Length: 255
Ligand SMILES: [Zn+2]
Image 1 (tube, rainbow, N blue to C red):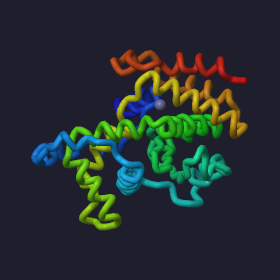
Image 2 (image 1 turned 180 degrees about the vertical axis):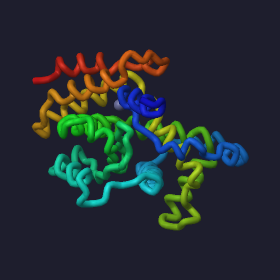
Image 3 (image 1 turned 30 degrees about the vertical axis):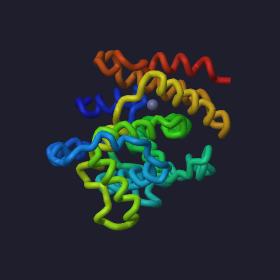
C-alpha cells in the first residue's frame, strides 16, 4: 500500500476526513502578506459558516471526479441513502468521488462526499455508519468550532468571508482558492480529539438505531479499518483512539 493511501486510511481510522492533495499547495505567502487584525476574532454567524462550507464544497467538487448520475457508484449511494434527505435538521446532498482512497466527509452545509474506494471495501450499512459518524461531527458542532478557530488566526480570512456573505454571488467577494484550500485542511482534514471521536461514534450508533440500519456495521467497519491500518505505529495513532478500541466500544452499544 502506498504511503498516501495508508495515511488516508489512518486518517479515516481516527475519524478524520480527507483532502484533495492539490490543496496542500495553498499559497501561505499570500496570506502572510495581508494585514492582520487579530482583534476581529468574534464568532461567526451560521450564515457565514454556511457560506464558507458552500464555497469549500464547490471547490472540492471542482477538484474531484464525481461519479455521474446513473453510474454504478452513484446509483448505489442513492439507494443506500434513500430516506436520508434530511436527518436531525441537516438537509444533505450526496455525491461519490471516484478515487481509490478510503474516505468520506461531511460539511455543516449538508455536503456529504463518499469516496469510491471506501464503497469498494464497505457494505451498505458500513458506509451508513461512516456517514452517521461524519454527520455526528457536524451536529455536535466540531466542524463549526474548527472553522471559527481557523478563521480566528487571520483577519484577512475573516474579512474575505464577511465579504463573501455580503456580496452573495459576487465573484469579487469569494474566498480565494488558496484560502479555501487552507480552510479545507484545517476544517475538514484536521485531527479530531478523542472526545470528538467518541461523540461522533455515539452519534453514529444513535443514527443507525433511529434509521433501523444494522448496528453491528459500526463494529465491522471499525474492525476493517483496524485491519487495514495493521500494526503501523505513528504518532497520529498514538494520540488518537485506535479503530480497534473504538470497535470494542461500539460493540458494547449494539442493542
Ligand atoms: Zn471522526
